Image (tube, rainbow, N blue to C red; front, top):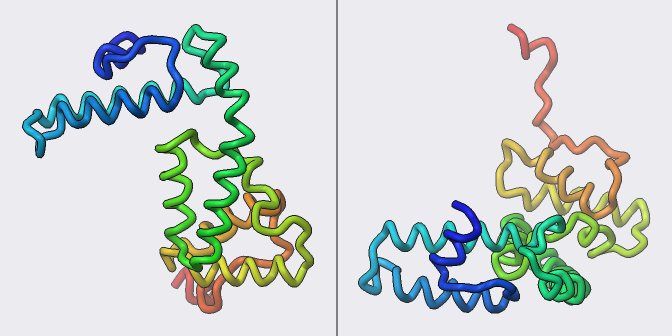
Length: 183
């Protein structure tokens, strides 16, 4: 899919804002959704066009030929960062592992994919070693998948603090006896 096809599918003209893109997407969904009398193929095209344009529009290197878009993007970034940090803190308070992933995906769908620097210090502005250890334990406890809990927890630890953990992230019992591993 190219830009012209995506714009035609959503009946959208450049330059556009993210709100205009979202509004065009919603109208196209109402027109093409199979539950509302549309076809599956048309609905898939609309979804692909929206994802394509959103990705292109929110990519720092793409302006879609418009200084208006670049200005809008630059002006919106601080507001989006604030909104994301609020949603991130709320997910932390919910104490559910999937809430983190959900926040990222919902935010990306509504605005843009969160920038990695937005995570830094979002929960702890100046964390002590005890707070870092508590956060590490929290991440391991809420990891949605026990098999990959260490990897998942370390990823979010690095996002929050911008550094590796001074602790080993392994869950108790997750490291097998080296003698038994190769038998």
